[in-house]
Image (cartoon, rainbow over all chains, first blue to last red; front, side):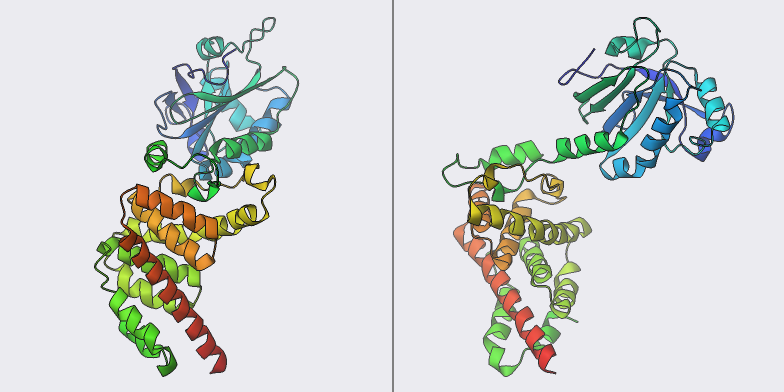
Length: 191
Length: 175
């Protein structure tokens, strides 16, 4: 499984659009999302094993509820399973919890992304409950994986994102006796 | 309300402030943007609505919108950092080594020349009275190429704007 410091694999997947747009029906519901989409943003990419199973909608809806919080932190959220975009759409239509889901559902039907990440369950052949935080440069900064039946806490993902984004950039952080701040380095780091 | 109207509001006993305000408004050591942002950030840090309105009206119009926003951002973020880091500097112990766990991402991308943003942060630190914040921001701006005269000019602006705000607070209280 890929981990912190690894480059998130490149991908191009069909997806059900977020929100009301996603319910427009075939031809209107779908879009394509790739590693080049949402350039410059942080990305939260989370996987679930199968559509229409029980733990999933609660968990996906919980990510959806926090979409605004993630957006405030310059982050986009992608939900992924190995089901097709048509199955995703059907699930959206038929499940009250995720009908208004404000995040896209990506279809990794060829299991290419899940395989590249190393998160396919060896017996079941479906994606484990893996979650990745990817920085704007495309590098994985956090990776976590649960077994097929263990749900996740999206609030924890938000907490980790906060911690990743919380750099003490203020020169006030300087301490007497420590190495003098290098303003040029500081500006380059910040730039 | 303009700078002239604000100066007119200062009573006779604060005539020195009135004259200082007038001369600092054209202080030649600073670029127009540095000067304008210093006035505005210092006004916001000094918390008097009349002073803030007058100085934003006087200096904000000549600034690029993103620079005006950055001056406000300097006052906002330093309002937090001055209190937090003053605590760690004064109390010491383990506190300076503990991660602050506070977001201050605007400092990385203030939307304006970083040296100007640092200068405004220094002016706000002077108003808020955080000693080591002043030392460390002074270090950054001088190493970034600003002269002692430029730093001094920014702090002179902060001092006069702060005093003006205090006088108007007092006058309002006695009205």
